[in-house]
Amino acid sequence: MDINSFSPAPCSLLPHSPTLLAMNTATLTSHRFWAYLQLMRPANIVTAWADILAGFAASGCAVFISPSSSDLIPLAWLLLATTGLYGGGIVFNDVFDAEIDALERPDRPIPSGRASRQEASILGSLLLSAGIIAASQVNWLSASLACGIATAAILYDAYSKHHPIFGPLNMGVCRGGNLLLGISAASSMVPNYWFLAVIPIIYIAAVTSLSRGEVYGGKSRTDSITLMLICIVIVGLLGLSLLENYHLLAVLPFVTLLSARVLLPFIKAVSEPSPENIRTAVRAGVLSLIVLDATVAAGFASLLYGLLVLCLLPISRGLSEIFAVT
Image (cartoon, rainbow, N blue to C red; front, side, top):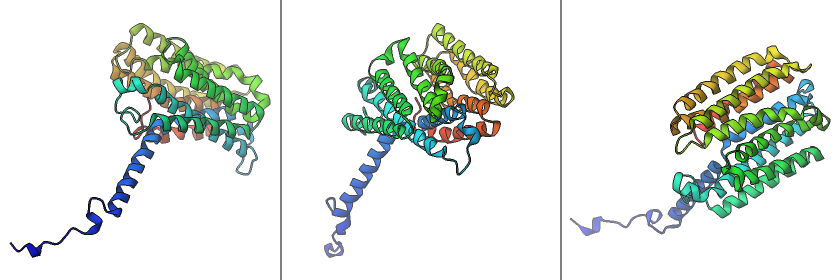
């Protein structure tokens, strides 16, 4: 064979060519961006938007809203605020759990090396700060609530998460505060409806408590308590009909949907507390926060507004197929 028939590889394919290096750099940057996006759990952030929309309905603003309404401006700021607050809180969850995840879930972004713990801390700090700044554009009460939510999120991530009682309660306070953040669009309504925060507090406490068995399985007694808490939430949603401006007929379809989505997987997790069943129940519980919020929204605003909030569910479910929820 004639050696002259061979020609050098094109410059663009040489190992150290500028083109190949640029391609490798772009690929690496893309992977790193994806890793940090995974840390934020976009599917969960969508459920936080539902909290704001439900609180906005309870504030009374949603009843009078129109495409040209000035109420859309504070709503936009609050949606941006909860994106930063929830995103930052969930990023710090992985920052503080890096050592545990290295043993239990080594495929997660930080223990796998796809994301830097230091850079994740910076990202979480920027997101929390952005959330507080966005809330401050609405009113001082919104800013105060945002500061409280950020503090509660860090407290949960760093200290209370592994406590059997304070951990679930702490996480519930974060979501209850998020609902109040939506109500703060009309700050005068927060003192009137502060008790609404109890519903997501109980609900999230139940889901968080159940999630402790995601890796090694659950305990039948603890899981039975979480099922009882879910039942209390459903009864509470119906009990809000005692309020003059809460419409029970608009609520019933959403309560039925919530019961079907949550009770069935929770009952299965209690009867067979395997890690797989518990993960399935927790995932259903997290995503069904949107149904819970749609229930509250429909009760205070209208069936149509509740359906608008419910439209976030397929978005969150779609994202949950791409990004981890738990």
